Amino acid sequence: MNAAEKTIYTEELYSIQQLPTVLLTKPWLEVNDAEKEQLSKILSALRLPMERVTIKFQPAFDLSGWNEKPEKLIYFGALPAGITYYEVIDVNGVSLVASESLEALLANEAARKRLWGALRQLFSI
Image (spheres, rainbow, N blue to C red):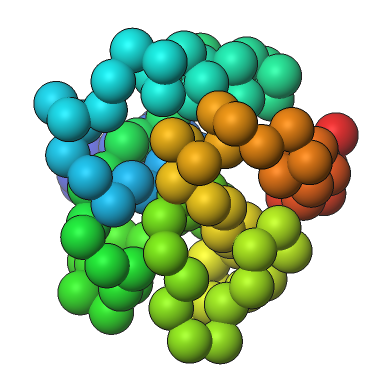
């Protein structure tokens, strides 16, 4: 045996957990302070600081072009066909909850409660 055959390489393997994703139908720069505060409250209730989620903009819901799909997704916007609000569903391996826009949630207490129930199920709280 030569020296190369005796060498053992030890490597540490890491499993990098994907961050939950928030998908908005308007650009972040257009999200007003009240909507940002609403999102922050939602994430805080889930024990997720804003820094621990990926926030993406897409004018219409479409996961087909995503290279890396998140495990968990919260979508705020108009519903595409086949998706209902406030239910945990699986779309192409992504567990998601769809909700009205952040702006619409501000004035709708019942919708916020339904969203919270679905998010508790999505995040196993």
